[in-house]
Length: 285
Length: 289
Image (cartoon, rainbow over the protein chains, first blue to last red):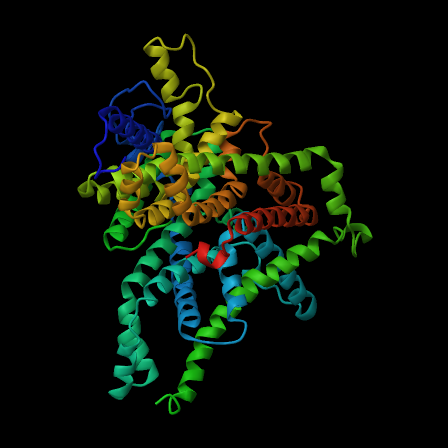
């Protein structure tokens, strides 16, 4: 039954076969995608026609590799800028929320806490459209009242950043709260007794203690922003992020350039993820 | 000590409270109120303004809308159940059967694929399964298939894809609770002659219930609100409700209709989550911990 008990051979073997099947199922699409990025063929499929790096570096006329593909490169740039902005904003908001809910007492605390975790159970599509509609209404109202067009309230970079941060901040908050719970508050008292003021205590004691959780939360925020589709699709303007851009290409037929991008993304996210996991952060993406 | 810090304490409170309040108010509360307001108003074109129920009436009048809605809800429940059925044995193997040395490695192997964007995972399945895809070429060349078969674009494949993309959100919480299950309980039951089924039914599953519920909520919500997987893996007539919302807002530019659909989806997801919490006597606060 479990490892400390005598188990009949067929039982353990059947279980092992199940787990192996499961991992094959888990990795098959990723491995195939990565391998076919190096296939010297016009289509991301078999047969294998030999190894090539053209889908990374090729510059035409038949094969344009990812590093020569202006549209895809631009969308990668957009995604990077969005992800960095979201990371900064949601790390600040999430950390503030962690302090607020763990260390402060105030009326309606439970109600506010409930509001904070609500974005986790609201489908991303709905967050996207409601923020789009709200920003639009505010934008129209300002235009009617003052005759000024506020650019960042229209679909585009800042709306994407705000929309993604609305739920990613919650994730960061939960990660930081988990660590803050284990914090020994007598350390703060000791610092006060030694004459530190509140901000010194915050900076030198508490934030120092929270650093692994904050870095882990920030890494998570970066990855979640980089791959977000459901909320972003409604908020993006003329500058598409990478997932949006890839979606359009996959929908309308694909070339192995997408495999090359996938290869880079899989390797990149795996490195960040393994780094994050080895730091001991609980890694629910 | 506390008294002399009173003033600084308040300043600290404001420092934390203000950003959080602005975030929750401007990005969560007000947008959803606006969604609700728009869903009850006319399109504004040609004097069509003011309070109206026609956006909701359209939902109930057009069978395609509410059928898609019911279909989406049913399939989301089905996917959640399938995910539970797969996650329990996987979590059990990792926490109770695998050699202790390999557990850390298995955990990393389990999680890494889920950090990769959903789009890439779906794309992987597309190039595996489509008519000119890898599996078809493979099976035809070894003579298993006489000619290529379209394995993509049907409901079964879509369900498989949804299970694949949401599985981890069940496995991680279930592993979390299963780790706390004392092995000696299982040993005792085993020594007293309990069958495997009895051990699962009376010890393991009841113990894992909190993990199953929190995983279930997240999985259900993700599946219900997913767009990419049904859109790219489902067939032409396998509509998902999020696609209806997308069509109304992006294609027809009918925001009010889209708002009504969005609000209905929100009500549905909240309702099912609420029922699940009531049935299992848990609170949302504990579930997301």
